[in-house]
Length: 80
Image (cartoon, rainbow, N blue to C red; front, top):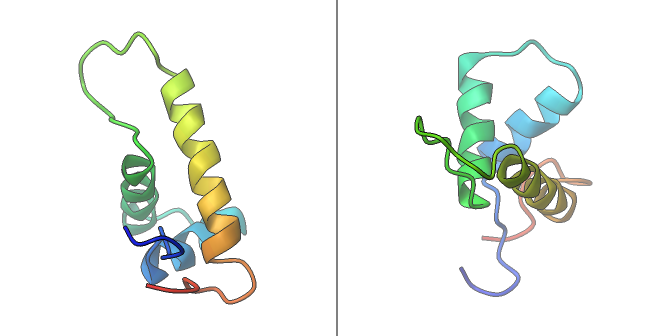
């Protein structure tokens, strides 16, 4: 990913904003949030994960940072 490029897509920004504003939860929004978490390194493996929930929390912190840089103020990614 080029330096300065948005990490989150316009759809992910829109869906994360909706979830943060307590909009109704939908399958589509959940899948969008999961896609963002996977980009941040989270693997929702069905097998035993000795690092759970620490790995999930780390991915959530990274997605939150991306959300602040990519989505806030415009509702869409700033670049990319």
